[in-house]
Length: 245
Length: 245
DNA sequence: ACTGGGCTATGGTCGGACCATAAAACGGTA
DNA sequence: TACCGTTTTATGGTCCGACCATAGCCCAGT
Image (spheres, each protein chain N blue to C red):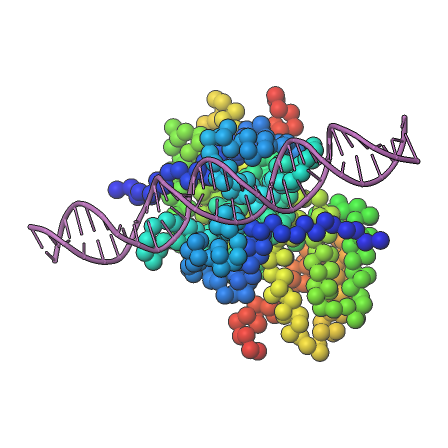
């Protein structure tokens, strides 16, 4: 006997969603296109404005739509391509809810960033690497607050990912890194007086990473970034296992 | 002079969202917890029910909340962990809108699945691999419709990813594969009378992949899955470049 | 040509009514 | 007491109509 899932028909806003999604998948609704005003579209679809709005909100959450009030050609609901914040929030919440273990997240970072660094060593432009170098420069300041150090750290990694030329991998890298932002931050703050030494060591690794990428040495860069991530996330995983240590 | 982004205060539902997200991040709202009924929560937060509902809809989209009507302990809005469909829809729409090129998607699959197969070769259980084998078994039928073949194909890959033990990577694998589902399907259908031969070749590769995983030969399995993906996605990318070819 | 004040299109919010669903409470009968 | 059908009620889902907020547009007056 087959299994029977409840059919759960209706839920108007889901139908609306399907309808819009269909248009997107069929290519009839492209990035940049404007949707009709809510007050027109709702009756055209035969639903209430509230139901339509809930569907639009979903699209907005996914990062394929923005809505701005007012008048003129830029007002109203427009299709866009902004996956980053959407993916970020999604992973952040799921990590917080424990959908994914820290080990899994660390392993994913390793996989994604090995690829990023290898690709960056192959194809990143001088200009992009200079920007990454500028980020590292700012991280040298020993008086830098931990929070800012952490943000620049993320920025460096994401920058390399972007420079690798693969939009999807760099979006994923950014989202995964951001999902453990507070955890990393807490771990860094917990180092207490050892922080300056930790920061120095991290800076050294980052500098070497950039050097290897510049030298076009993909394999070595990949290996180092793996050690780099395991090194720090590793302590994180350990701390999580023995909280008071 | 620094840049000034519009501050865009309010948007009530976003504030509500932040408030809920805060509770999740603080660990005060865990998977399985129930939220108060909308009619209580809305006034408690000082917002209208509609605004609250839009925030809840966002949470639902992200896959951290489900809402069911009715009475009893299982009714109402509950926190859950269901990232898969959320990520699937997100990537599917973004691929459709052209946020990511086919090359990027293919490259991401390579990166993710190399890791999956390597890990599976290391740690997958006999039982899980038997299930993967059962999927392959069903794909042998030469009379199988292309659509079903495609779905089973996805299932095989996702199954291996799951068996690798990394939830995050397997979720990503599934979502990425699903985002190009229709594209792959169209390509397969376009093979016309060559389809049986194509299917046979794919089956052969799948069988060999499973054999390598069973043998615990991670490196070779990774290399083969890379060739496997590039082989088929490769034609896809080429076709996209020259549509009428 | 400029400037300022109203106009209007558009999304955002609100409150309240009503519908749909599913469990729980109830009550009657064997 | 055990069962079964009916009613109640808690809960999300939908709809409507009003009003608020925002930002470009239009036009009158200088």
